[in-house]
Image (cartoon, rainbow, N blue to C red; front, side, top):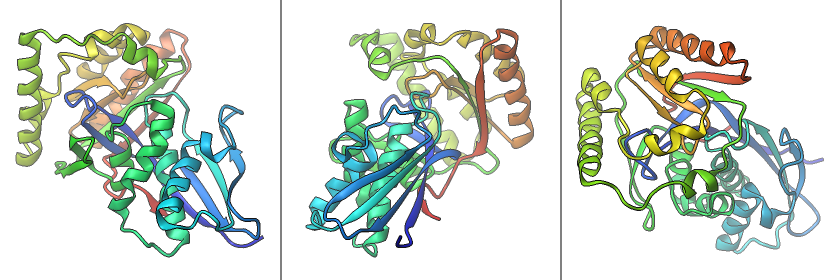
Length: 310
């Protein structure tokens, strides 16, 4: 067997409370790994999927990592090239942490690395987005862009992929808790109203603007005041058991803000430093421990690298 190229793509927190479908940030862990190698058999084949409990297809056309890779190969005129792909899922599926986005990013980047980087990293975004679209049915980069490029990313326009990395004050840590309950993205989207009351529209715009100002000024207090979702969170909170109890616990423990990660059920909190983040983590865990709901928890600074070759 020929040696392979391994790529890791991290999980991400979509929406970041005040930027529904237009903002997200990358975590250091968890994430997905893709391994690719050349093969004597023409075409792309997925030979192994690990960690997915049989939930994912090995047909490249029906797999986010595979489809992203195929779209890149088509663009490069390399569809006849024999390539074997392995997908190692090292993060939960349907967690609200950009699982499908991480797979798509890893698939596209692994092919680019195998072919000696014909494209720059940022130019892989449209191919990863096509893979992500397969799973989410939406053309939005709030998970894909940070997973690929790292950092906290604002997408001004999803259609043209006009995205911008925002500065993150030194010391900011994210805490995420994933209760083991199922929240389907399509269900989380179906309950959202197309109508937004003017008062909430104004409040959300003000929070988003203030949040960005806080990032640029490293104004931790302003970030905390601004990190409030006036539109989406109130509609989706009922899908997540004990959401408001978890949020209250996180804030009491010192979190700057706490909201839903992506479509949920994961809940994220931002803290000014790792010590507070650890206290926040314990407070969030305690709610689900007391409720006898199984969970996973993660804690990391904002990942500034995004996807990497291992």
